[in-house]
Length: 460
Image (tube, rainbow, N blue to C red; front, top):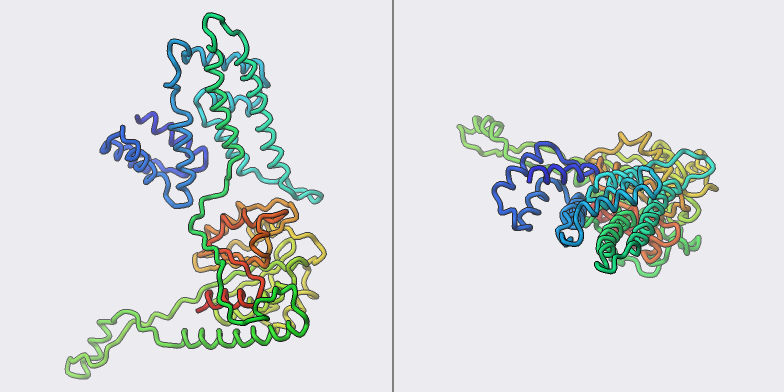
């Protein structure tokens, strides 16, 4: 049993599931206390030790089913017709007739019952980085690597089909066919692992669909459809909301926060009144203000909404301990100083005229995440809320979603505001379906009511 457990741990580590030696020892000790023939108990013991978060549970379940079910010893083989030696001999013969490369050998190892080399290939595909190229910044290298593995699987499948129909013995029909059918089923499992959904388990995602309709008519008009007069009216509404938000936050942080009873100070004060605790003293613990890091897409496709999002970011400066603001089309540009030194209208004008943002470029979320992760990752702490405003349309560039996952791990929560209707998320070049797996909360934000609802939910 210990050997089986260690082999399973090796497979989990190969698939990038972090398992320490202490956790292996704990699991081994717990397995001695349960009935190993009860799979529910066995699975629960391993899951409790090896899946340390809800986001790891789906990966553990996938690996458990692969190792203990799909890759189980071939007990269903009829020993009178198909022996393990015959299977090994057949696989060795097919290896000789196929290209000798790491991918093909990993596939044959998978067919033979050892999933670790193939898991290494899958993990290599998942963590493969794109080569720097000014001419082409897409995820084609990852796609081509995945297609290469798929091509090798098809070659092995063709070889199995040839083996299935060859050397049929009239006295023992179907001898090769039985072995080949089982190997084909296992090969299909390898193909599923290559093509299945690889996004992390994120059942804690909060996807806000409903909102309060505080403003009829104007409040429901999409930002992109507003006339100049309606824009001025909306700015007035937003200014009123900003003043309301500042007043509430000022009262909240200026009010006395009692906290817990301060026994020592209360007893010292009671000495003035002959030991009678007339004045009760509390520990003064001021409320901690949240830090905000905001990334706002200012490309042409979302510019109509970006103006109001920038207004919102500007308003948040006085309501939180620290607000760092970035605008991007390609790489992120820090506009915090512009917002701190100018009023909102001048600030937005200077973002357009005085920054090095190329508004004519194609939006590249992968480039934005790459540069932010490289230059500004230190801004994200466990007190930080990361707000991303954009439509997640990457123009078919590499989305680099693994960088958003690394940013999520460093901050308190990640909120994505998308100015597009939800029915368009994930269509065309939209990577919203990819990115939302790495967010704590996603919201549509394409009109005044949705914007007001988000601000009130964030602050109040």
